[in-house]
Image 1: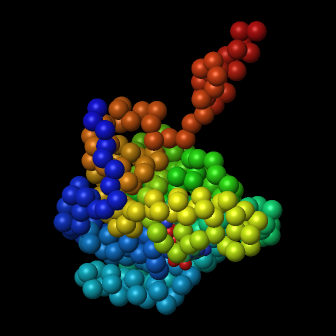
Image 2 (image 1 turned 90 degrees about the vertical axis):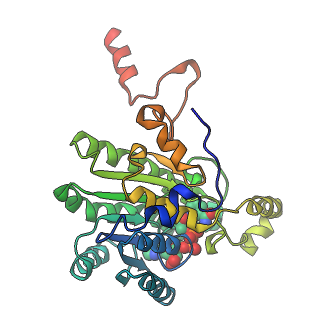
Image 3 (image 1 turned 120 degrees about the vertical axis):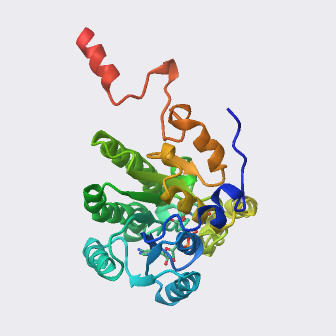
Length: 314
Ligand SMILES: NC(=O)c1ccc[n+]([C@@H]2O[C@H](COP(=O)([O-])OP(=O)(O)OC[C@H]3O[C@@H](n4cnc5c(N)ncnc54)[C@H](O)[C@@H]3O)[C@@H](O)[C@H]2O)c1
């Protein structure tokens, strides 16, 4: 199997030209669309021909995204929406259907990381860090799911993070939310597959790449004072943030067309060449692109059936 190339810029497989018109007439909801990666996702969706519903808290910058999407030639509506609020979500979802019709694509992108150690945060702030990264995506998935199932069509793309797969300081809330989002994506897909929807409805979890955005600003002064070594480490780490937001935007566009179905339920890093990965096929990707735990002695992590069978033998 060939090794996937690593990309920091948009490449031909996911280019706007390759995907132009493939979502004509469809409707895509993008959360956190006012700036950064969410804005790039909204524009990428618009370039595939999808009309877009833009959700964010930042009305001013959302208006800019809306205007840029309209310039591409699609309908765009902006909604003030805190994705962690279920009641607001329900109202906004109903309004989107009135304004744009049935929704076909949901990209749960809104998220954020305070980059503080737990002991330097209030409980409310810490918990918000978990909620914004996982609760919002779960709420919006639950809102669209009944309609996706009824119409046997849809894709849900969850913007997770590599932080959900690795251990690092100053990210306890963030990584908890993102790890939960990766596992949620896999579990929801397994339920869809069980009911025979796998070919029609797909759920993905993505790492967007290491992208310089507002979220990746330097460590806060009070944290830096307590952890001066981390400032240097973060500085060197931050230099590696070279991926443009359009790589994630275009990867979302690619997946929304159904071209990457073999990755359904999986966690994918947008910096990898998706064409090479998809060419490996479902069988070739088995046991890969998933969160897992390996044990000394090779005990399989199979949900408890090993211990159950051991008990039966005893
Ligand atoms: N930048 C990176 O390198 C990187 C790496 C891994 C994952 N991510 C993920 O990518 C996504 C986008 O991040 P970004 O770097 O563009 O950050 P960003 O801070 O520039 O953008 C986040 C957007 O989400 C909006 N938002 C925040 N809370 C919200 C809420 N409760 N309701 C609605 N909107 C809300 C913000 O207003 C903002 O427009 C996030 O989920 C982030 O965790 C980013």
